Amino acid sequence: MNTPTDTGHANVDPGEIAKFDALAQRWWDPAGEFAPLHRLNPLRTGYVAARAALPGARVLDVGCGGGLLAESLARLGARVTALDLSPAAIEVAELHALDQGLSIDYRQCAVETLLPEHAASFDVVTCMEMLEHVPEPAAILESLAALVRPGGSVFVSTLSRNFRSFALAIVAAEYVLGLVPRGTHEYARFINPAELARAARECGLDLRDLTGIEPVLGTHDFRLGRDVRVNYLAHLARPASGAS
Image (cartoon, rainbow, N blue to C red; front, side):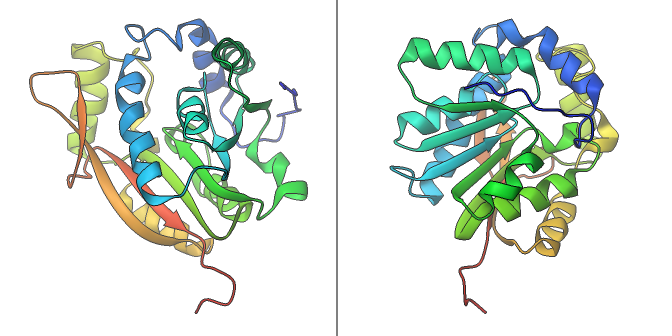
């Protein structure tokens, strides 16, 4: 159920929330502004499912938007709680899940608000295409690490910061091809894999895998590969209790 929460002190850029609020009604249009996410979603879902046992698992999806990943994980048997600070996105997500007959616990709140009652409670935590939209991504990662149980997994996707990512993710995707709305990304907020790995290590997470998300030439599709210079997925794990 949508539970609005005071976000006055949350790690959030109000301008980012406003951008996604304005587009919320288009979340489930596979030909609309979120078309790239529709094409990415099977890759993200498969990446998680290949590395974590989802049936019956307690999963937290942070920055869920309209619920693309949350629904996919729920269909694989996960018990999903999903968060976003955009009230319009949460409303769309709730209505779509209801229409699909899926039980997902959607909440309009900041991830930090779960810590007092839900620390170390989730088997899997996901945070896709969100870290590059917040003022302090390391603080978000710290919250993700605190919410996953010992032995559990954290999955994130984000954009690397270099000339290639600037050319493809901003110039080409936003201004030349129009794949996503202009102003969707801010280059200075992109996160290199080494920076992500260091931030993860500082909050007690081990880096298990880095996999690139690569465009398929001549199409608007994507594939998983070894090139992490633009968009990439990371599998992080919280060591099990007693592990050295």
